[in-house]
Length: 326
Image (cartoon, rainbow, N blue to C red; front, side, top):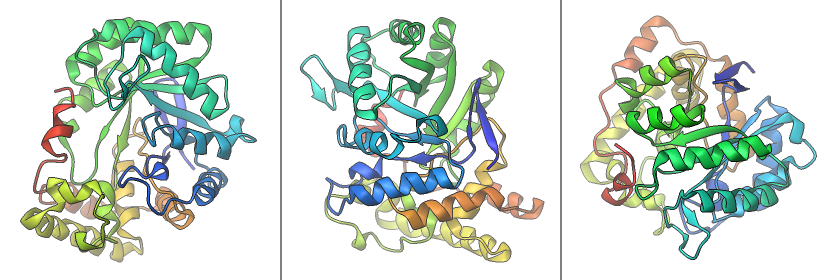
């Protein structure tokens, strides 16, 4: 598989997100840790070198699964994980805390669960309005000096925050939602990243599963699946967004690729500094997703994809949008 460049960190241009291995869309029903481990190992067999997780996933379970899966293959993989949505001073999971003390407490837990003595890419999961980003970046700089972290990343950070953090400690990657139906970053963020030499890691490149073409009704979701309250999966918005999927499916049919492969192939045309992390806990899905590496889209097909009708509805509900630095 070809590589992408996140600053000076080289990773496979298609990675693997391990969020759903901890049941993040639901409270955990139907999880199969052994299947998740097989999925990670199959991804490595297929040339994936970039596994993304976070302490909040589970919490903690996703990191534990990743650690078990790569314990005999650590030299084959770049591990990315995230801090800042678990407070280790009493607030617990769901409490935003990127204070230097919390960053340094968080890394120790992540290292233990991942079974490693260093983290390749350590992200601030969400910007902490109570802690100056300079203080957080300085804490990660200390971890880099100690060898516990190799590269620093930000997630869902604004242009101002990116500049401020980068001035203290080089930022290697920004992780933010990006896909055929979420293209906000194209106007300001992507040009900024390229000007600073920062790579880009799109999360949810398959639109929380809708762009796979496998979802035609939310009635199949369990009651605790948070997509049932996501504006893009509700009411008329959902019906309108299915039309986007149908167009992606039609283009894929022209070249013999699935909707998921077509959506990922589109992202891969956007530059060698972009490395999407489609998430799955199924071997069959990781095989499908990684095959997008060889999909070729024509100029006419790219033009059609570039000009799809924008998605209907906000990409998150009000509570989640409130946690995004804008």
